[in-house]
Image 1: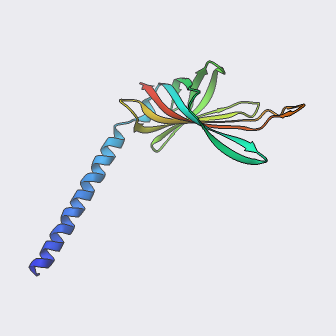
Image 2: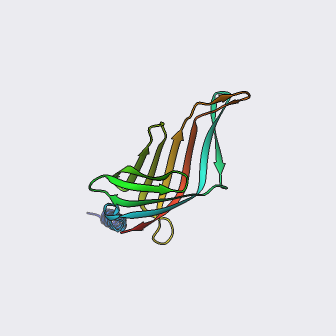
Image 3: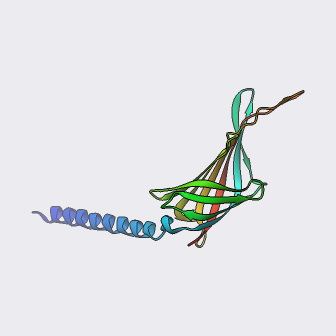
Length: 163
């Protein structure tokens, strides 16, 4: 084997080792966040995106003025349940699932409203975990000069996890 070929082979081996080390470091950092042992979440969502229909076409609009704060308590990931409490909606039972690197909380009401909070196994600041909350709702109302539209909102923020 020529010196040039040995050098190229050595670089290939070194590159492979570095890729394996980097993958191991990423895997270790992911393993640090165990979503299945979370018992409470205190979430703050300072930014949101709302879709409004104009002439039948949905238009997204960023909102940074309203902050959504919610608490999720008595989380039982093995049993798939929790209790969500918020000032506007009171307390109610929800479904919880941990899939991969995400914890999902699903709220469904008999009126058709759906809310889903996803907490990711990644830190935002300090020990807080990145999260999003999606809400869809529609209550058909028609009045003179007014017709209600479906409400679709996506909130962005993070959660403090209690174990």
